[in-house]
Image (cartoon, rainbow, N blue to C red; front, side, top):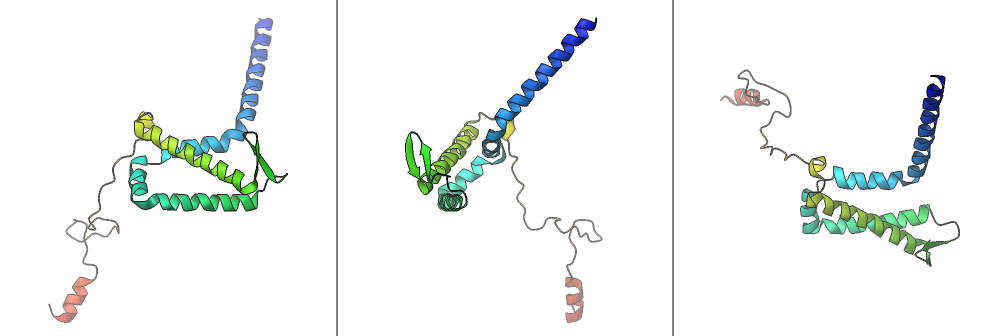
Length: 161
């Protein structure tokens, strides 16, 4: 019985070491996983696609340009160049490649969601259209149908209505 307990302790210790090693390997990739999870599961690509078609792509391009400029100024490479695909490229060219890769991943996530591959993980219920007569302010009149006079009764009384 003592040998069985020792084997379970060894198994637990080895499992714990495996989990710690796997988490250590995944830690540098956490921002990229968060990027993919956000664009795949948190964005309604049906609505975003409509916005992009009518000119929203211009804003996306300008955000990308700003990402390259800010990232290039804040975090230049230590030796002055990026080593990408066997090439040595300058700081801003390297950052442009990185930002383009991030945008490519973003649009790939959108295409996966639009294909229906996410299933129930990426469902966005339709919003109910507000006609302006909703109970957004929480005021109720005596009749209980959600409208108050908004001070009109005093104005009508002052005019003599």
